Length: 347
Image (tube, rainbow, N blue to C red; front, side, top):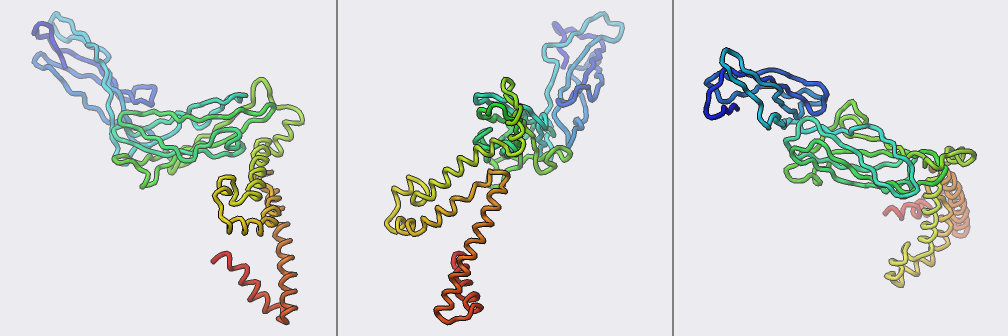
């Protein structure tokens, strides 16, 4: 729009303009518009900005203005020289992490970090996704505070948001740990009214069904991993051992308490306590099975195999004794009494 001072009419004005996409460093389109002496406004026509996965928001800026012709006059640009244009895609927006990897310095104190999530494909609509964390070598509750099902909603006009994660104090002289931060579209029941489920860039980590950021929790700078402790940590993961010990303590306590906890024991009935006393030998025996956190689950696997073999041997011996007392052949005992006993818990 042109506004001439004191109603005066200038000559023919030429204004250069440039269109820049938010995610690009270089201008995407340039051009100029011309306003003759009888025109007070002019329209800039430009196509939507092509980006990865769709068309995104862009900014149109006026760069320079000059008078063309013999008229002795000057023209200047006003204070508002840029316009932010929001585009809307029929297929929805695309979400991606600003960086697919992030390294966090280890600390002896809890720390909060932020992961940046960007939106392309337009910001003219409400876009929603859910996020969660998945531990790899990093253990939830030991190395970081887990996020089971967080929700992230991009309001109209917003192209960047942040997810806050909390790391826990890291042990001294331990190697870096790794976890994943995963974005996914929400289920239909969890989708807010008026919101559009997010989509993801196919050639990024996670494909077109999710977005994944790999997060490394590095060593504590003052106490780097070294020597025998570093070797042991690489072999068995000291964080998993710490988590396994905590889980094993809880497992043994649950075996002793009625219904597994102090609260449930206080509210238990006489029947609950009676059945608990009868099952205590089995509960204590099976509490010797280590949690799956130890050694990648292999300790749990082999101890379970030992218990399966032991229980099978006891059942086979008792079934044979039972059949001998009743005078029933072993085959009939196996396909009737033993089969019935093993199938009853599934009913």
